Image (tube, rainbow, N blue to C red; front, side):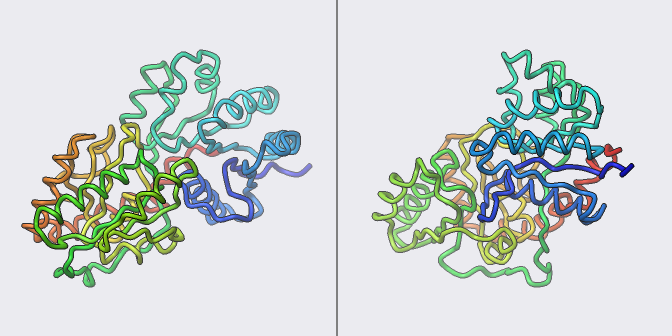
Length: 349
């Protein structure tokens, strides 16, 4: 009788297409690190991309995973949670495999509240891995005790500390590096840079916007793009492996998110590996991820005037941000796969 494999990873791999969203990137990183640790023959991948086109095929793959793998590791998006938690609870009645759920983002508490059946399914899992202590506390308030913190991570090579730029070019280069949607504060970044440049009467900042444009935001963004001044440009998408190379010469990453429930945003990790300080809205877990005055400058969410003030002050005293660059590289060490994934691998049977 063949022995069971180490684990199956269920998440959005994207088929043969390239996706750069946080869910896809983290799913691939978790899978790749497990393959590195256990070998390719021991890890099974189940791709949820276009799952609605063939739900029976997906059901059979999940059933085979429970029969043939000692551990089931789920990384579903919000809609997938409603499907996979009950499904694997049912499929696991007889085999009693260890069910693991790696949460991407900080929205799970809000989804589970008022859904007692789904909450019960969550309590039956072996372990839920959340990105921040705030998320762990929020779930424990719902009576979900099987939680632990596993920080988000990326497979990146940090910039060499000796090559950090101590005299940035003028105008100062800032960027956004996330999905291009309203909720990520893209328009706040555009407006703030325009406001500062108008106030100084010259181009103090240039703004590069990187990332995929959300489908529902495309028309709005194209309208904005037509009116961009020369110092604001949309630069398209960047492969995850090229994030550090793309960011390393920036003066600062702008992260004016309007999502209070952000977990550990991948763009923040990219910036830390690139040795680039972050000017950010203070989302719920901001203080668990960034160190005010050491790796970042923060402002109260939605306070665009405070955002502009940080940019103004940074333009007048750029040395303050330049001095943060080595701190960012030091902080990046917390987000390497070998460190973060130990939390998960020690729970595998």
